[in-house]
Structures are given as C-alpha cells and as structure tokens.
Image (cartoon, rainbow, N blue to C red; front, side, top):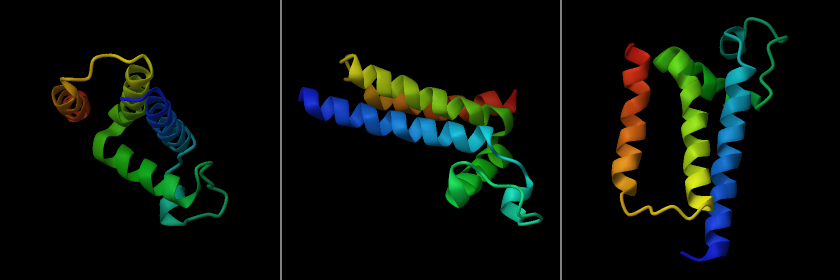
Length: 102
C-alpha cells in the first residue's frame, strides 16, 4: 500500500476515534430523550445518538471502541503486516460484546 494512502487511512481512523471518544465522554442520558436543552454533546446530535446506542448496547465496554480504532490507525501508520486483517477485525468486533458481558 502506498505511503500516502496509509497516512490518509490512519488520519481518517484517528479522526473517527477522536470523534467517538468525545461523543462518549460528553454524553449524558438527557441528550437523546430531549428532556432538557442543557444536555449538549460535543460531537453534536449524531454523536449523542451514537454514544447513547453504544452505551445502552455495551455499557462501559463502549469506551473500548475508540481505543480499538486508535490501535488500528496506529497499526496502519506503522506499516504493520495486515495480512491477517480479517482475523484481527473479527477479534476486535467480538471483544466488545465479550467485555460487555463481564
């Protein structure tokens, strides 16, 4: 993969991770229900919606998702061998519900 393409993919993944982390850390339950206008998510209405559904679905394990995204961004940027990408993605996808079940 070309070096420029790797950097673009890593930046996009890191941006997605930062956005999701900001949405999760600035989430309060009244943002989605519309109970009060004081609850404003720093990632906007889409961030509030994503954070709400992630926290309702996975609980505290939802905070692991941005960490996994940052890890994949770092792996792409460092030019790690990604021939087992399907296994790594499957493991990461299965890790979140397993951690949520603990």
